[in-house]
Amino acid sequence: MSRPSKPIQLYIAKGNPNRLTKSEIKRREEDEIKLGAKNMKCPSYVKNDAPAFAKWKEIIKIYKDIDFVSSGDVDLLGMYCMSHSQYLRLMDQQRRIDRFEANYSKLEEYFDAELLEGLDAFFKFGPVMQLEAAINKKMDMLIKMEDRLFLSPLSKVKNIPKKEVKKEDPLANKGFGNV
Image (cartoon, rainbow, N blue to C red):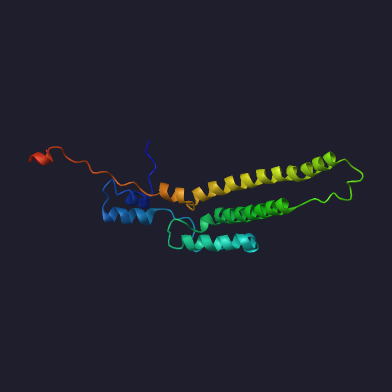
């Protein structure tokens, strides 16, 4: 059973370990399957959402000189942009809830102060906890998509090919050749 072949760009990035010739490299580049075209059209659902469309334009600027992103990746980029927009909306809702102050002055003559404090906590902290859970889920989704799309600094660092360490010949210093 044979191993699946790696893309030629990955071979070149790792220093051409199989010592392929220029003609072999060229032949393999021509034979590789390219999914989609270089131009990426923004989906309509992203265009209709202003924060998502702003994120789309930012990402397209990052990817303009990169060869491995194509129109086949439009859906994943669109999902990332929409998730980012939803995350921003959730954060805005959290800021509004944090600024909210309930006014129970009209109810003070009818209810005990402890009951009013309990009502305040119930109506304020329940939704806050649900909102924080939604924000954390959305943030986890964004982090995973950023790793797949090479948008986070950590994923960019992980993608850099490691340089091979040249082994020194211990006998070379003593006048012997590479024997």
